[in-house]
Image (spheres, rainbow, N blue to C red):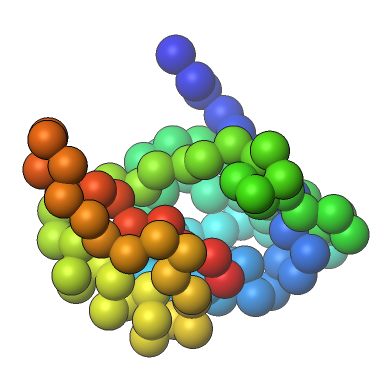
Length: 103
């Protein structure tokens, strides 16, 4: 079972603003280079650390899937938070896919 995940961010302020606006995540800062989120708001404990490098699925980074009970509403929230869609919603044998986005 995964207990905690840490992800790189080139801009912690922008990362926090996006995830708070799009998904309602809450953060606790631990200095200027680290912020954490909790399972209470994000579904999993973890954090973002400041780094000049950031991984993407195109460069071999992990794909993280966020659950949504309403993909269309989530897509609208991502757009409103100035996120971009990497892969649009598509149907597959188990239902609809999660949407991939980036900020």
